[in-house]
Amino acid sequence: MCGIFYLMTNHEEQRKLENDMLQHDDLLFSRTTIYLTPLIESALDKQTDVDVHTKDFLIKQIYDAIPVAAKRFLQNKNTEDKEAIFSVYFTWYISEIINKK
Image (tube, rainbow, N blue to C red; front, side):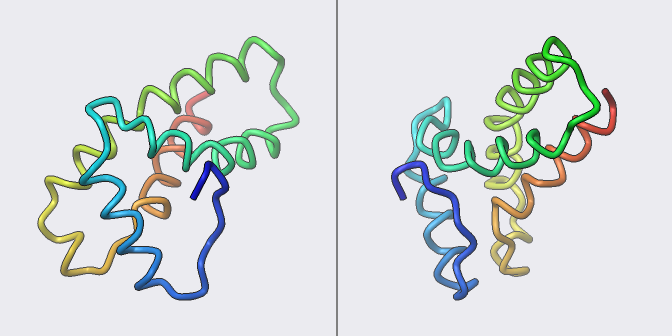
């Protein structure tokens, strides 16, 4: 894992890896934050129409959303049944934050 985000070809393997990471992470979801950093950076790199201050504000909001999203994901009993993948779920949070800029 080591902070390198990549979409595995085996979705079941990725789902299990991410669920295990979430369930065994600390209260601030530090491992999850490191894991999601490349995904966040990639999304923000595509935002060429924002100034540095706005981008810094977006970064803070996105990182602040990680514990909230992780807790909601873990509390949602349907995520296990739907074979949901947290990183895919979190892209919705990223999109919502960026679109509100």
